[in-house]
Length: 561
Image 1: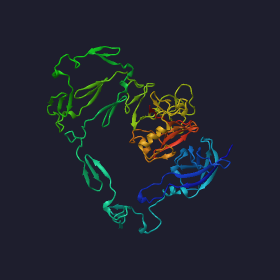
Image 2: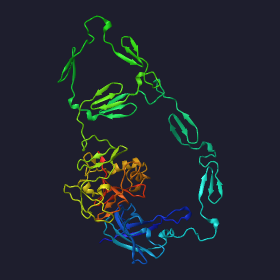
Image 3: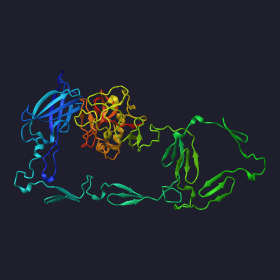
Image 4: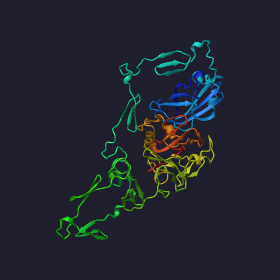
């Protein structure tokens, strides 16, 4: 068997002893970084590997007090891999109860360079002083080993231009602290804000904008005249807003109008005889047809004459009846104005969703395959299921799904459990990638999603992440944890409404892991022999993008076509 050389670079300690006065606590983990090489000395770059870590007490062969593994982690372009020991998938023991101060401790490293769980022993080394800040957290840190009260930790506070120490003493800051090439505090950068018709500066000062600039006899900018326009299958208002009418159009029944003398005919249909069409067989110019036009409150005839309409009866601060606010309403095939007027649209049968009802994103969607209802949410321009998909027949975690025409899923049965039944009702099913894709590799395929929905691509996940957190990954090219707080917004209770559950996973070793401790969502995009996922952890505010082995059982969210 090809042996992999695993070179340990360093431990990075996260824990720091903090004075009891600050009421802080050390994180229960420490950093581990290493470079992986194969037996030929070549660095394993951008490769998925797995690592198992064991902590021995007393001696290298002593009892194991804690053991964890990190499955399918990705090395970078330099062959580096970064871990947090204490935050892996726990196999045995409790990291938080290790008594670092009682005995010597030794770390044993095992690795599977293929990303599986067939581990090869790499070596054991003694832990020296690095993780013992975890032990120091448990020591009495009120007594700081001296009797000098003059060197105690204090708290810094700031008020206006003065910094204070909690036990006394202060320093006054120079007048202007902004590096703007002057000492004048009156010309500092300020923040603009807007309220109604007034723009404010954060340090004081404001300007009231001029009243409504539209000449319509009032100062209200919310009731301006707008133009209706029509493009393809959409009706637009000039100041925004539109309504899609495509479902009502059927251009297959278009007909031709023709006129012959006083008769108007429709091709393949009926005809109507028109009344006097200007040529009215008399020589009297006073009874000719004229054109009506409208300006402000006056109706004009094209050959002269007009009538002034009564004053505007609507209490809207003007006497102009031509610019009244009206309501648009829609009934069957007719669009109505509240003060009169309507247009009838040609009839076309409306295609129904799979639950035989008009679907609007944000409402519940019913999957007609099993009658299950799913909440939905509109995020940007994307309509997502706001619950994990849960359809199919349950199989045990030790079995693989098969291409047999039956949708097969796992239901999480608990940590390290091999149960055949578990919590699918609350957390949805877990699916292997090929089963989810229904044995195709086409990105954006329907897969196990209902009709009209599909498995999101890697790029569509990036659109979602960058909408909720613009710092995530605009180029959709980074791996690992990205952005600032996209994970917080996507998790249960977050501001996006996505409501991601920490449903855990089913691993290729046939066991369930970490329900409530993390979740992975599949995409339909491949990365080599693996596929792209999105990872969320309870203590991590960001979103992870990593390739994972396709035999893992992960959660699925469907995206509307």
